[in-house]
Every structure is written in C-alpha cells, then in structure tokens.
Image (cartoon, rainbow, N blue to C red; front, side):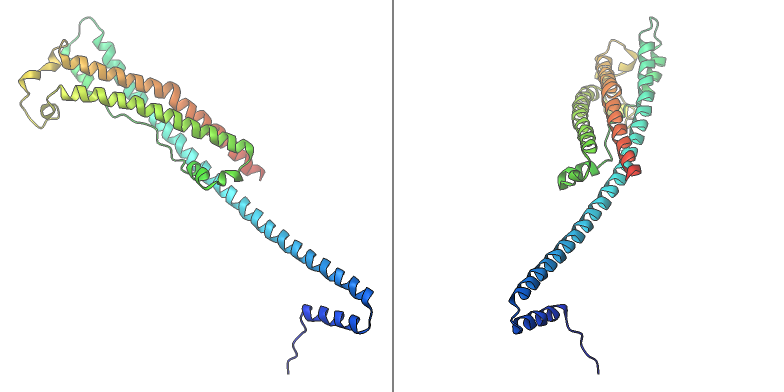
Length: 255
C-alpha cells in the first residue's frame, strides 16, 4: 500500500501547530519570519530564473537579427555592384555617341548605329534589408547596442534621402522620355510598321530635326541621373552599409 509523502506546506503547518500547542510563541514568531523569508527567497529565485530566460531569449533574438541583417546588407552590396557595372556600360555608350556627335564630320549612319547601341533601361537601387524596417516597426531596435542603433539610423536615413532624390531625378527622365517618344512614330520606331509618318519621316537622317533635340534632352537627363547615382547615391549607401556590416560582424564575434 503506497503512502503519500507530506507536502512542504503540510510540513510547515504541522511545525507551526506544534509550537502553538507547546505555547512557545516566540519560537513560533521566529519560525514564521523564517518561513516568510524562505518564501521571498523562493520568489526571487523564480523571478531570477524567469529574467535569465527572458535575457537569454532576447540575446538569441538579437543574434538572429544580426545574422539576418548581415545577409541582407551583403545582398545590398551585391546589388550596388551590379548597378554600378550596368551604369558604367550605359554611360560609356552614351559618351561614345556624344563624342562622335561632337566631331566636325559626322556620318549620320554611324551616329545612328551608336544611338541604337544605347540601352535606355534605367536602374535604381532597391534595398534588400527589410529587417531595418521591421526593427523600427516592432520596437526591437532597442535590443541593439548604442553603436549599432546609431549606424542603423544613419543607413536608414541614407536610404530614405537618396532614394527619394533618385526617384525625383528619374521622374524628370521619364517626363523628357515622354516628350521624345510622343514626337516620333512609335509604330515605325518599334518595327510594328514599315511606313513612317510623313511628319517625322527619316528624322534620324536630319541632325537639325526636332526629334534629335528631344533625344539629346533625354540623353542629358539620363547623364544627370547617372552622375547623381555615381557621385552621391551609391557611394553613400555603400559606405553606410559597409560601416554597419563591420559593427555587426564585430558584435557577433565578441558575443
């Protein structure tokens, strides 16, 4: 037959009852105080364990954020490299066209070939580091050290400022592009038709045509965008990204 073990509470209760029955009030009082102290110590130990678990959970979350940020920031650097390479190619083609156009004796057919070799695709930087947005939205930015928070804020500020002005500059290019496109026969230019409208017929053979003026306005605005990206946007974002990466790597190694 199994005997149940008395619980700790019952054990303490029996001791108190025995002391009262023996009329040993002073010892009872001393014991009661001791019991309260033991309960308080137990609560403090439980709170300490809970706090330790919470701190451990936050530390693990912080490390995961750092690892994810490092992955995303490296992806951003890779994107910047690709954009800079593409921009260099596009810019070189435009410069070749302009250099030839500026010569005294221009062969209109060679100029047309150089014109057709230009890629009009405009590329802008779109960050991969969505963790930066999540940290501020959730308030988990507080997990990071002061140095990390300052570096994160600086990078976010660069993203917002330079991407805003990059978009504004791009909008100018788009408006000029509309003027140029609307001044040509789009069906003919894009080889949907073999007949060119009489108002713009063979405009590419006439350097004094309105279409060439609009085309050159387009090239100028593309160059302005490229120069802004090359001199301001990409170098600043790259520098701030590399700075944050360095700090995150150091924190990971240290912790």
